[in-house]
Image (cartoon, rainbow, N blue to C red; front, side):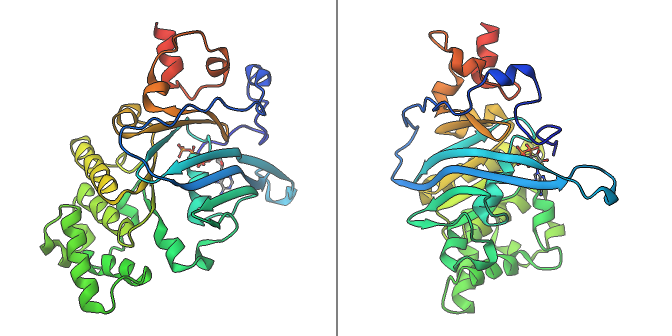
Length: 312
Ligand SMILES: Nc1ncnc2c1ncn2[C@@H]1O[C@H](COP(=O)(O)OP(=O)(O)OP(=O)(O)O)[C@@H](O)[C@H]1O
């Protein structure tokens, strides 16, 4: 992960950025989505996440500087919606996902899940329902599974954590249904992770994420570590389950073709800020009239809009 910039501020990387009025309200596009979407289930309001890091490589210096990973991040996500989050490396995508998951706490601002504010509650202090409601599919399925536990046991373990099922037999049955859901043979329940391919491991990761009937699933580059030949199948599976379960999918990706294919809306981030948020068609279409603010805003390299505008 590349530092946002050298001194932790967002203004000093390039003179061009000084022209940007970060406080100007964003033109939020209408919510026009591919499928039917429901009510707002998640709201982030002026979320900030700052990290304090050593200013020098010398341990003795003790001097600290602040890295502003997320700056006044505001957006809403609705039931059944796929919101893609794009932006160049280091712009703060994973950071807000970590705060949402409770792996980090916010510096300022709020995250409202249903009617609960969760920005200050670390994962270990969250109630079972909240933990089950917000789940993550990680980038690397090779790291996320316990190498010494069978596939079945790992899914049953997630069901225990989410308090699904009244007894072991019910949980075992539910685990088999989850294997069906992710299109893995039931016989895989007794396999160890080392006996699975990357794509199969990621299917187990998806089964665990949906084990507690999550309302929101954050998928952080879920297929980028997989062989190209299985990326489409895993992406399609994720979309299929998301639609079936009316889950809100926050899809973090660098792959603009996948983003265009699966998302209802796209949020473009740069240096911790949201610089564009709109329906997928709006974000990917070339502007019909010159839109100085959007294109003069800094672009992750490149934003779909600005890339097209330059090509035209
Ligand atoms: N624990 C931490 N301590 C200090 N700085 C951090 C920490 N985690 C992330 N950062 C910094 O915060 C900024 C945002 O990082 P983040 O991982 O959110 O970016 P990203 O957009 O997800 O990047 P990538 O696409 O490469 O995964 C970066 O400058 C990074 O160096």
